[in-house]
Image (cartoon, rainbow, N blue to C red; front, side):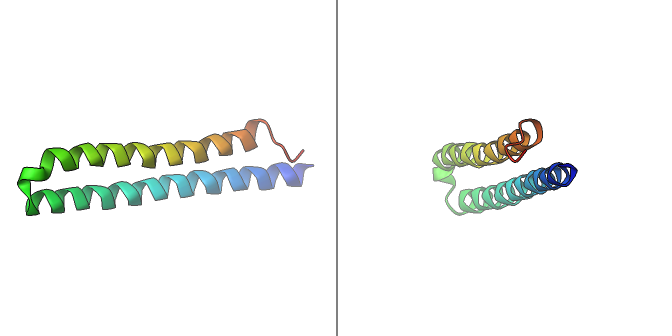
Length: 80
C-alpha cells in the first residue's frame, strides 16, 4: 500500500514538472514568434497579439488539466 502511494506521489511530481516545463517552453516559443512576426509586419501586430493571447489560453488550459489530474492522483488516489 505504501509503495503505491509513493509511486503515485512520484508520478504526480513528474506531471507537475512536465506541465511547468512544457508551459515555459511553449510561452517562450510563442512570445518569440510574436515578436518576430510583429517586427516583420508591424501592421498585423494587433491581430497577431489577439491570436497570441488565444493560443496562450489554450497552453494554460492544457497545463491546468495536467495539474488537476496530478491533484486527483494525490488526494483521491484511484489506485488504492
